[in-house]
Amino acid sequence: MVDPATLSITVERAVSIEAPKLDLLLYDWLSELIYLKDRDRHIFPVAQVSIAGEGPFRLEASLQGGVIDPERTALGADAKAVTFHQFALEQTADGWRARLVIDI
Amino acid sequence: MRASHELREKARPVGDCIWEIAPSEKAGMRVPARIYASESLFAQMDDGVFEQVTNVACLPGIVRAALCMPDGHWGYGFPIGGVAAFLADDGIISPGGIGFDINCGMRLIRTALSENEVRPRLTELVDALFGAVPSGVGAKGFVRLTEEAFRQIMVHGAGWCVAHGYGWPEDLERMEGEGCLPGADPAHVSARAVSRGMEQLGTLGSGNHYLEIQVVREGAIHDASTARAMGVEAAGQVFVMLHCGSRGFGHQIGTDYLRAFDQAMPRYGITVNDRELACAPFRSPEGQAYFAAMVAAANSAFANRQVITHRVREVFSRVFGRDARALGLDVVYDVCHNTAKLERHHVDGREVELVVHRKGATRAFGPGAPDVPPAYRTIGQPVIIGGSMETGSALLVGTAHAMQETWGSTAHGAGRTMSRAQAKKRVRGDTLIRDMAARGIVVRAASKAGVAEEAGFAYKDLSAVVDVLQRLDLSRRVATFTPIGNIKG
Image (cartoon, rainbow over all chains, first blue to last red; front, side, top):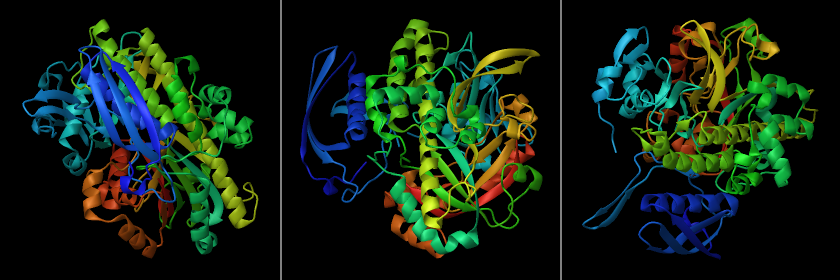
């Protein structure tokens, strides 16, 4: 959405999300970041995330980011939403693998 | 992930520029998939189009066929250019058949100015419009609203704007649905959607959204009397074209209900081939709630284009030192191209109520249709088709034949031929802006990368799309417009 190098890190925020399934937790988490971009003009390039539970699942995130400054921030495509088109989350031998298409 | 070639190869020509994939070609298809394209446009369509249009043909309650317009390309759920009608009493509604940018649409505004009058002040004009109409990621609009006022906008659309001084009463007479679709209910809109979208009224957005200054050139008026009825009078005349939608408000409503439908489908025993086609029966509580929220977003999009129109009038008035009325800044028309609407159509000799989904497709009602405003009822509904920022756009009218063939629907744009990422690999935004300036097109953009994504070569030839519409009598060509100034997100 923006070039993080052109964003001053001035904002800290905690986010908690609960969802009945793990893939929905991923959907809700990314949708939250898109929501905060529009509501507060906040972009978070840094996130520490922990996930717990076995259904429902709970995500706790500590975010660091900044406010979009039209004079300084290099803007890219605006993310509108996370789609379910080809949406997949699977556990592999190497860890978790997700496939996502974002509507821009 | 790539789609397979298999379904493309199953498409058979069934008439001039009409291709069909039979229901037997894919498990679960209830009706054929029908694609409107010349051989050349058909060859340019992504394999994903054929996968997606046949997925739509599997949805419950679909009537006659799943359709794809000549500008069709790979989308999410429905293809872009997808049209499908479902029985209101026995069919579904799907956010994936409308898109996240609910009531993304086009508005055309005429002026009484000529290119010769505008050209000396073009850079000043484009700069002033760029300043007055915020665009790009994170842009906030100029209209400060209370939550109650925003709820009024959800219900009254462009009418709220005119009542509050952002427009002229006659503007409403020249819009699809008079700028307000019935059935909105703010009670079905989440607080998140309100807080996300409330401050964005009057913003353009990014991606392929734009505000353009255009000219109708010599030889570009194809039907003089119809053009005159729409205020398109002479070569050299300047127009303003807007392409934008419901912004974060609509995106959030799409997000909320896509997720809700994803969870609701098992309760109704519905399965879909692509999760983005998550849907619910139209008459179910979930279906009715989404419809009421989706209409609220559609009305906010009409309001968005209306307050931007107000800004455009202010800027023109300031730059040219004359009142906007004296400058002839009248709305020609405003069309939606991402909606589902409750419409009555004839099926097997009977009039039935259908939920017509148009995703990247424009309504194109023919002459005499009661939903066409009185000013245009004898000529048919104006259809505004946006092309690329380099090549131009088109004005057409709907036809009686479109009512029978496509539920009164037509194309919405040129249609992409390559992804945004591919386009950015071929050209840099600043290079393209310089090149366009040398060709007399002044561009101001919030994102240079965004300009590269919208290069002319990333789109199909608009005239090829319009030719197919004309050959199939889905719309009739009236005039084409060439850009001279472009504001982009």
